[in-house]
Length: 210
Image (tube, rainbow, N blue to C red; front, side, top):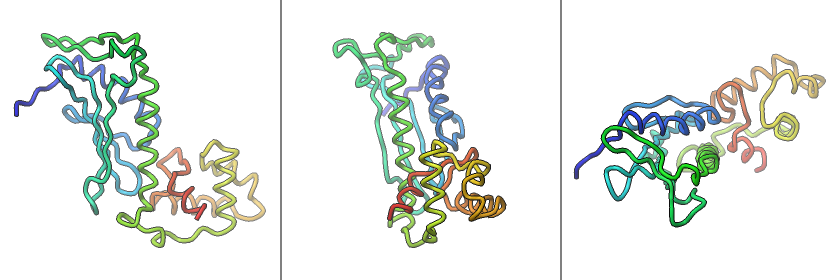
């Protein structure tokens, strides 16, 4: 099978929406070749590739897959440009001809929706750190009632952020600032909080709700 590679122009165009996803999902590692990488909590490595169909000049799909050292590839997702089009008979694609790339029918491409879907997919992956095949819930310490209250408050009042100052204002009579810092570091180390700025992960929500 012959391998085709995009021009530098196509890579720059793809890098625009990959960068937008990277701003919203911590762990973005950047691009190597024609692949973009994220290193998520829980040892999850996400690889995203700009792919094409039909002809060498048509680049119209983003393919993503997630792997862990324990189980290898355990999830994948495709994001075809065509399904984010507002016109069924004129789907958007990157036209790469003679080394110059440009968007065809870009006005009909809902890039924001595709970025939202990619972000949602990666956020959902974070819940897999509780999957029995990867790391069972019993491997995590059971949250105390205070910790459950902290998580609920962070979700409801801090937009999901684990902000020590904001949490201390509410729970300072039950836990010290140093205790909050230790808790945040412990949860971050085992993949229940994202890297800084720390956010509550789906896995932590699931653990608290069990």
